[in-house]
Image (tube, rainbow, N blue to C red; front, side, top):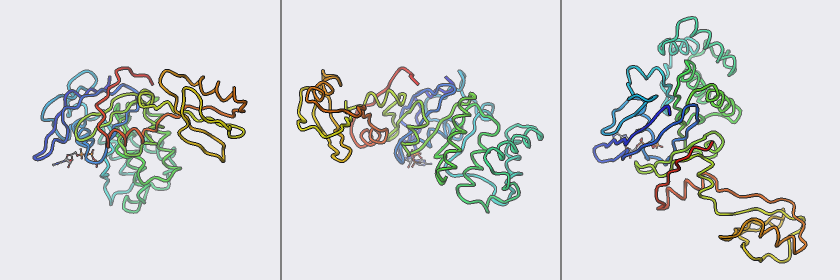
Length: 311
Ligand SMILES: Nc1ncnc2c1ncn2[C@@H]1O[C@H](COP(=O)(O)OP(=O)(O)OP(=O)(O)O)[C@@H](O)[C@H]1O
């Protein structure tokens, strides 16, 4: 584990922002910290980065209690509210920030040039931050967050304001950083990005953890035994043993069926084949993280923690 949060609590005057939250972040993984507005994500991140201290509980970084003075150089944090010097030229600024994070002059220049080239930002070198578009400054902020190769990278809504091409560029860089050994914590409301990118997720709501598991485990746990069956022609008889039709698309033609407890997909296949139907496709329909998120945040489902880490 690179990071462990143990029973963290942070209360503001009238608000329990974080109310006894514990979880662990595996080395080299891409971890999603999710939750609706006001759930407590930023407060958690601020405690992880030593910006604020918890009222109770502890942050363990690489097996030892987190020491902000020493460990902060190993953390790259891209907050949602970006902090860049508006009047400074972009190239100089990236080099300056890299040097603040402990790189020597030559290495800071070399890495800045390397990243600017790879992300096609060379022509920005002499522009000022105030002359960049929202997406461009987002890209610059990303580069200055990861350039010094921090062991832990925390990204708050890293894709906001990026067009699909640039979002993809940043996504590929996130994968590459994780592959090369950085651990990434990623906070967002955009569930489709989480499905694509994260190995493991924690969902917080009203200051408490309500879900903790790998994306795969979570989707398996909340599955509703739904399958989509594609046919050459829509069958005449739709009712058989062991399943119920819950949706139909006559154009494709496709049926969505829910398999009853104690039955397997074979029941559906056997029934339609025995009716002489010609099948074209058969796929399990797992819930999207978005559906799970809404169900959990709006509903009253109890907290659910998965102990294994299957990536
Ligand atoms: N400095 C503060 N003083 C008082 N209350 C605060 C302070 N910072 C946060 N809060 C409260 O703590 C709760 C958690 O806020 P936090 O910013 O951690 O949420 P979040 O999950 O990051 O939300 P969002 O997705 O909207 O950024 C909220 O109810 C918020 O109003």
